[in-house]
Image 1 (tube, rainbow, N blue to C red):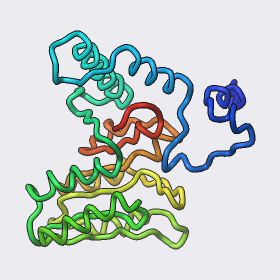
Image 2 (image 1 turned 90 degrees about the vertical axis):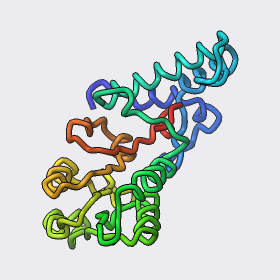
Image 3 (image 1 turned 180 degrees about the vertical axis):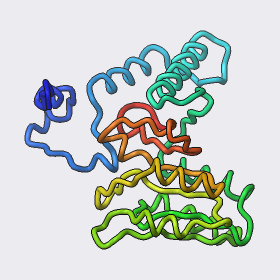
Length: 230
């Protein structure tokens, strides 16, 4: 653990001051916020709040600058090539639905296939079910093996010339299984398929450079880690 002091970190979260016995295990739904996030939001509402990209007056210009600075911060954090790759939305489920409802109908046709795993959260399952039903595509589910781990060999065998998209989580929210996303991306690209990675839970436990694996669509739940949303 090196010099890591969990007690010092705990003091950064005001909620524990009022709830000293709290052990919070629901961060997958909505994580508690550290003091600097709470103070940053309060300071923004007190001093700078205005519509972003909607006005030419000072407050709006200042809010817009801060908004775009946040985009650059996220870009650098994810090592994305361009800040235009960073899209802020209201939440994780909306992010995947946005892809499914915009990219999906424009690129999928009857007979095409979308491959997911059986480890997915509903937010990376239901949108693809609905999309495939709508356009006549086929949803293919890659299984886990007997140990509960992602079965890479079975996944590879399910890829076909009809595979248009692979949409998988980086780490299961139920079992904690870690998927080999770099190899998944490599195999999907070999079939000419695009890749969407649900990277939220992996981001909670470890910073990773998913853009280095050249995924096309990456969902991040920064909103559950701080005061930014995807």
